[in-house]
Image 1 (tube, one colour):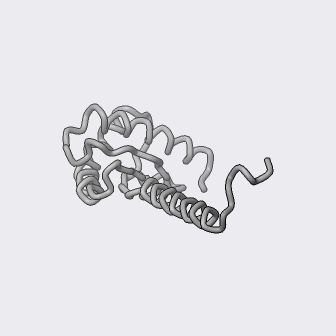
Image 2: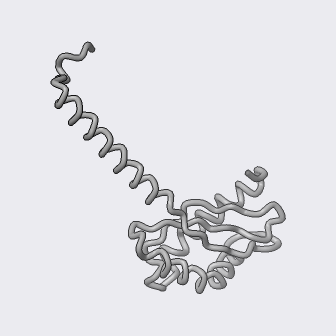
Length: 130
């Protein structure tokens, strides 16, 4: 959950991190990283940075790259944001895209099995009332 302030700060950090990762970070391990969310703790001391990748197999290397770049990113955030303290950045891999793709594949298989079973029973899609 969080308060309005922590949510607003999380959104601001997410936007700035996206810009920094795109333009300033030169590490090839984080080249294809997309920041999906930032969850700031209530005391503003820590921010969990959720990220995703198109290539799931690269998430370990990307995590290592983000951990290595955390100090640089925090320093750049301090220069861009006018805050008393900048939260410590903790990268967390967000596998919701992978889970969504898997769920979609399962649903397609189930739909195909239902259609095959309907054809085996002799049902036709045209016979069903609209």
